[in-house]
View 1 (tube, rainbow, N blue to C red):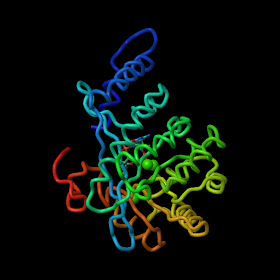
View 2 (cartoon, protein in one colour):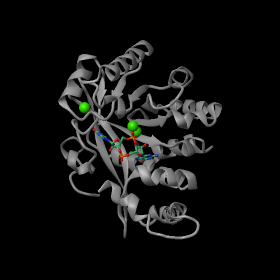
View 3 (tube, rainbow, N blue to C red):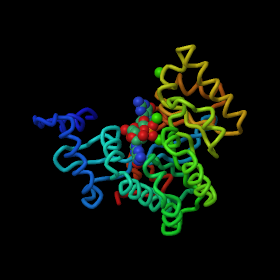
View 4 (cartoon, rainbow, N blue to C red):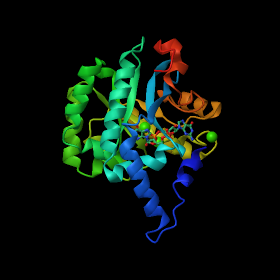
Length: 275
Ligand code: C2E
Ligand code: CA
Ligand code: CA
Ligand code: CA
């Protein structure tokens, strides 16, 4: 269960405060988790809305702690970012996702989340290049999902890095669009290939007029800029129908497919047994 991972770290009673203590323990555990093989990737379908055709997957990390069980990424990714462990974890995600995708029988795209700390690491684009060479994945199949908060830390450096990865032929998507605070100027300043509307805007898009107006505006923005828009968090047929009627290009969400081990999609990928 989702809340469990969060709570199981909160059992110390110490003067420094349970929260801070939990964080230190988790930081320590995270530093060993790659070597101990505690991470794996699940894959969530991204589909063309008008046809239902599968376009690709987003890779989402899962952590099974040997004693604490599943710890959700929303709990451990921020801790890994603070401690710097995200660089090693992110390298593992990138390499694993590209190596797995290179073996699929269909050339589906693979979207990988990149955190701010990774993006601002001076070696980032060189590492992406190396992973592509080693895995043999066609660069055009890799899409990096980057949030606005990752950009604002050091905009000139983020821009330089995005240009470098784009020169490799890799695509970049603006993730969680609408949740940042300067979305419009960032869309102009950075060479994005796609806009991902955050799931919080898709929930109730078919029943709430204000939310619908916002989503329509984002779709108009995408059209004007020539960028396809992906709606995340599509949970119901009603939401999907709204998005289809408004000509939203791509959808992702529980209604279209849950994040699952890759062998769940064996028919498309040819991967039939756990690796
Ligand atoms: P995100 O990038 O916005 O990913 C989408 C999240 O929404 C995922 O949660 C996914 O499982 C969930 N989701 C998908 N469809 C639905 C739906 O229909 N309804 C609802 N309510 N949720 C849906 P998850 O896997 O728990 O990941 C949470 C966040 O953790 C991600 O948000 C991303 O920011 C971060 N994350 C996950 N994997 C990685 C990774 O490999 N690297 C980095 N840096 N961050 C990651
Ligand atoms: Ca994402
Ligand atoms: Ca999101
Ligand atoms: Ca809804």
